Length: 170
Image (cartoon, rainbow, N blue to C red; front, side):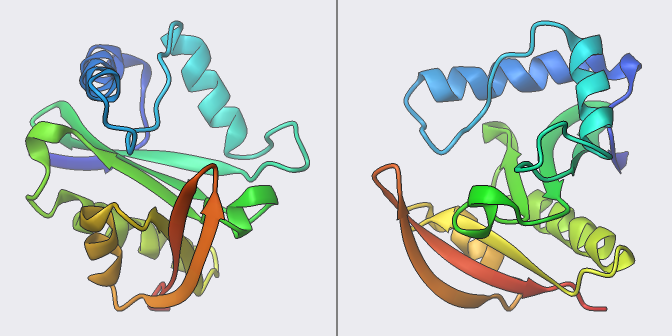
């Protein structure tokens, strides 16, 4: 069974498994994976809920994380940033995502991006910025699947990022 939704208190075990897989991949040298260890799950959930309405920092965008559950396991996450503030307009974009290594190449992220584009459209956002490192070919192919318009490249922290605009369809 597939579910796409926000986390709940009852998801801690699945979240921990998801997080450990990503942290292991990052530790093994995959610098495409951007994640930090969550020590206190309840506090993390509270912070996520708060960030949906107010980040407490005028330079940060409100955001919602949606998780892709497959038979009760979290296999992917997509972060939807509802505004382009600070570096997001230059390099971060509206959307950030990650799929567990053992579930890549199955079209899961395309499903999540489709879901996210509908969420943006519901909020009246007609086009979103999605960026990917130039050398992250799988991520760029995912973005390009959505008839994305390449808006050039930008340098940041020693990496070059492709900037794409994707219409939300509404």
